[in-house]
Image 1 (cartoon, rainbow, N blue to C red):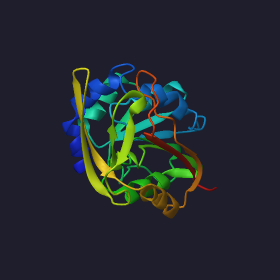
Image 2: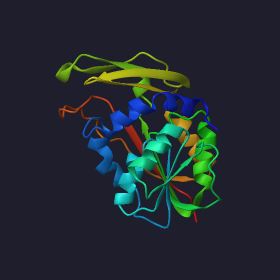
Image 3: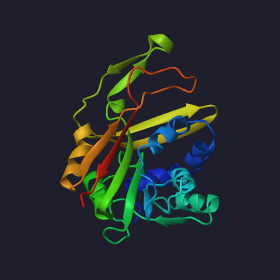
Length: 235
């Protein structure tokens, strides 16, 4: 059941659980409220694809959503269940969701699709389980972020493009911060690598956001770090 992406996250599960659960540690804490403004009000059922240790699922539940979280890494699912015993969490691959067609009003995929092996298949599955009139709410690291290198600090910070933008390729990034470390692994795609499968799945893109990137001290980066999108399954 666990593909290479699931194996990557399973290997990093304990690092990620500590990373994700440290308050105000990573960018999620600074951007989550703005991202949730993109998510429609709760309907009958919401699925969190690539839920990891469950922080997005827990926040969705706090907003009134009836959430099912799915993830390919068993340690992540165990951690999500432990933190939220009343929640529903299932081990599943994003490209093979164990749900009937049209099961959900809302599909949330927060920083998930840049990590999956089968991107078109995963987006197709998200579209399949959406009910007519339902919406996919997607967050990814911005497609430009893996094509360059940050040079300098503070007001002198610059972003230098040094990788081909239009190629799909594997990336790894070891981040060490405040005595913690996390190895991020996934695939770099151009923007159309994400939007074309959404079109092919019959979804209509209705909202796009590029939130301004801020460091922990409030300093603005000169480039976007996140890309958010909402798409509608037509009735």
